Image (cartoon, rainbow, N blue to C red; front, side):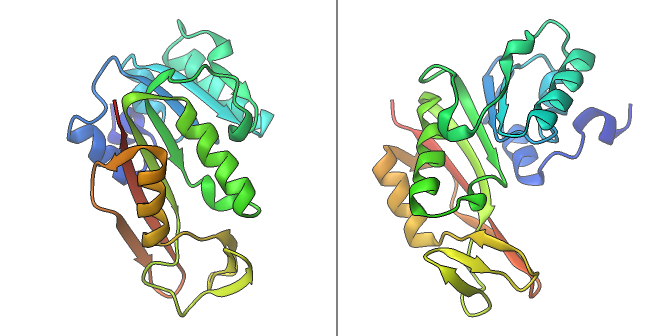
Length: 202
């Protein structure tokens, strides 16, 4: 089996968390904004109990097909076409929640807050939130504000951008603690992607 077959196109920073034992086998994992399931291949193959939601029904259909091939015992109802701010999964249902390239699509502050709190609600006490999202960190003078935190990036995309102070404030307000320092990848003159990993207080 090739590495790509085993891990799919997994986010490298999520792979790092797996290598460090932060999401041990047996963990219930919810992918909030799963897209086509790029981060789920290894987890499905290794027998994790997987749940996923995405507002795009076509994306959820792709994840259902992926799960049927790699983990056929999982119920199709684990994969739901619904926005993350209105997920129907129970409170505290998952020991790890993934939010990869999702929150920066927020329309405004209220939408961002609803998306984040919908995601956080599903995380069990002691659980781990793995979040990757666009930020202004390291490119503060290269982004052009449009409205509030919605900005035009040099790559031509429009995103809701966070910064370090906001993430630190949210960590405390949510009732969590950083599991890792905030880390940002600056793609030369294009965009910044920040990794925000939070452990929910017991």
